[in-house]
Image 1 (cartoon, rainbow, N blue to C red):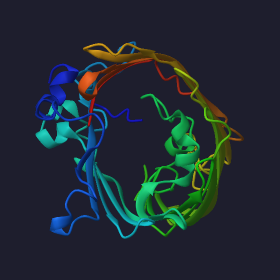
Image 2 (cartoon, rainbow, N blue to C red):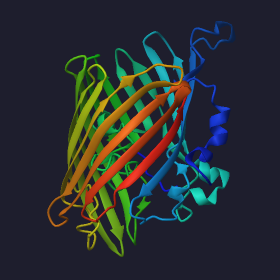
Image 3 (tube, rainbow, N blue to C red):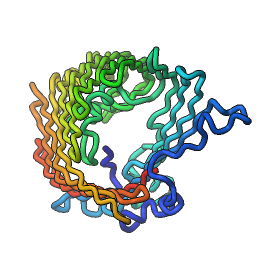
Image 4 (cartoon, rainbow, N blue to C red):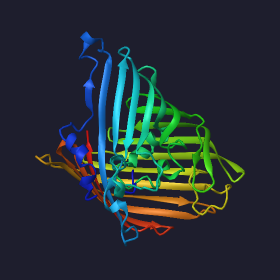
Length: 384
């Protein structure tokens, strides 16, 4: 998900980068494998690179965003990845991973193609972690990385662009700080078989995150558990529970919260179909836009549901690999005094071209308490 605000058509935003990388393979590229260079002493080292260059267009119908840089084309979530692993033995591998997000429009100085009022940096560390992996002892990693909740629940429906408006990784204060998405300063462990895997995570204290107005959010600690169970070759069940201790302070006040997430997902990948649904219940987690003071800054209770049904028509000709039409949607409901809801229904199609190019088109129908307009989204990707 990346509905950021964004000269010319969508292609113009990343033209230079796309042309430079047009010959790259779509999958990650292995620069060095453990068996290729015994004479150099690097026979245990594995190096892989990859990335995704993304140009996006977004239009709110009715002219409410007329003249926005979103109409001129903007960066829709470009990122670059690097894996460097060291195989200590047949069973033990030391892991390191970095993923850098790049706002190409801001890097290039295209002022009409990014939010000039935003203080966000032109580059972001999406993930950076280190650890080890063993068939016997499992996998342990530390750093900024996907949370247990995201990899067991949120990931199931994070497959179209205008999404994560009802899943926990997209509806909290900030998924990096509250630990629901790409969790900062986190420890994660997983172990299991090809059919059943268990996950456990821990969140260490983090820095303050400044919110709108006079408030700051600080995570003190947190923990999570989860599982992924392949019921059959095509059917996968996921589930997770997360509990985070946090506080919000400002204007001489301070309020502590115990943020809890409980969620589950079900995914079916039979034949050319992809069907998925994810749901969660959130306690003291979702911000209340009508909050009056610290005590009710977060909706005491809320729930969210997302779904997608997609079918793939394989073509495999000289230009196009497949066309994938889909229907998707979400519903987020804040309960209690917050009493607000958002509901999106999406009709979309993904066209996968050869050589790593992909075009996503989506028509979004919105029904929300704050009268969000309907919208149209287009995203051009180049994956390697």
